[in-house]
Length: 444
Image 1 (tube, helix red, strand yellow):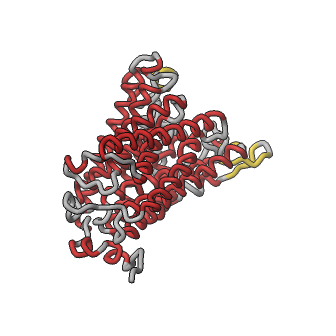
Image 2 (image 1 turned 90 degrees about the vertical axis):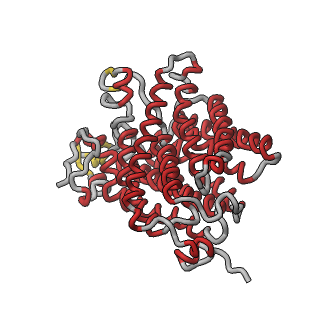
Image 3 (image 1 turned 135 degrees about the vertical axis):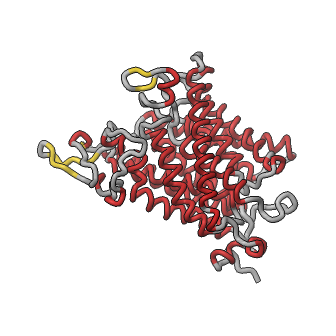
């Protein structure tokens, strides 16, 4: 049986806020095809279709999982007030995530719908918005194992990772679990709570832990597990289509306004501040990245500018609702510089993160999450407050890192019988032909 929804969750929705969140959901959904262009352009020409397909298939498989039981696992208890780490999961195939959220009731002669908490939007719209976050998180991981991973194993991984890693972590951060500001969370254990809420509330406005630290750590585990590409350290792996990279970065920046400003769940002044902070951080990160390139390599590259955009957007994601525009500029310029320096270390460390998912998403995601404790205008250390916020942000980042590392390792080992890599001949001649019987370009 499904869990009956109480009358208290029904209400009338605000058309403006609902329209904004629906538009934001569409913008975030666009980010996955944008990522396909970004990653596809960074690959060699014989692997571009496979790289793009890894994003598109994540869009398909994760959407199915989320509609069947994903929303229930992450947010079900937030809707009904029940306890439990998994939310409502008693009967996932009753489609709690979609059918129950579409219920209507006549209350005092007015037709009302299932609402999401105290917001002005229907719960089904919130589900649609959150679905797009799950999709892009899984798609991000694929860049670390580009040009060598079996497509069939990747498809299975998208389902298992979403179920066992993404959904529980989303519950921990946004669904009232361990990394939230609830009375049962880590922050309450560290510094106590008042009226059912931690005295120092962890801040992750739009997904620094759930999306970027999560994806970056999973990418590192898979890169180590799958192994290096043939010729790594000897063969120059050059992007085959830099205009694709620039197009993908531009579309990602465009979609990120839905990602960040949409997470306010209202068309209000805070959403406006988030929009400005998002732009400030991305622009500053371009500067930070290019300065490092100039000093290290003697030139600034288009790929560097595009990567700087993404690094800044990653860093501002958890912090966008807590910083001032000036603070966002500082956050962004450091993010761009840190990520540019980080990607230069992978060959020295000896792991093959093909498209720098670790260097950009893990490094900038960690920086953005922890830097809230320094730069948050109301609780940050640099604004005259104590170090409690910094301590909480550091702890939630470390817990997210550890959880993802352990769970992804278990999943990678469990899927080993399926085989993670294509054979050497397929990798040498081109994974597009071997895995998809297609090539991106017909050359005479």
